[in-house]
Length: 167
Ligand code: FES
Image 1 (cartoon, rainbow, N blue to C red):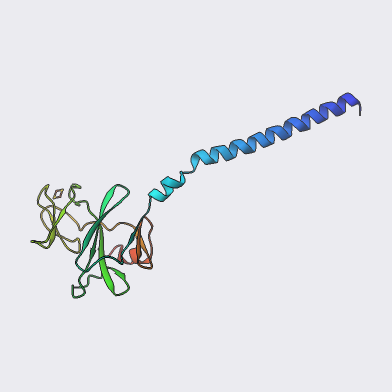
Image 2 (cartoon, rainbow, N blue to C red):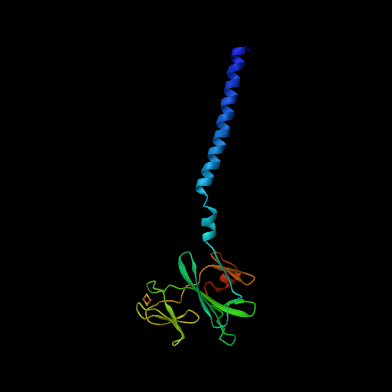
């Protein structure tokens, strides 16, 4: 092999190596662009510690820009196997706070013991079941899982799967 030939081979190998490394970097850069930012990934979940809640208390939190109502039932309240989220010996109702008629946000009225929708007068009981007016179905249950005494919205766990299809 001539010196010229060797030099040409060397240049060819060197060029190939540079191209391969460049290609690998490009792939990594492209993957970084496609992957959601860590903050976006975390934004899909909302964690709520249930321990400070008192019986009869209703809390509103936000999950993916939607209002979520969490209601801790009184110990002597009627169990609702299709809607209750059981955590230890406590029962909670967890629903998306958007009326199933046209999406207004119902408000809890203790005088009526119901969530009342101001838009067209729809009403839901404390379990989130439609009891009056145009709403065609109960308030929807968001995907959730239970981790100890923490409610994690945005991921389905066995407690959610148990309720799906029953409500
Ligand atoms: S949007 Fe609630 S009753 Fe119509």
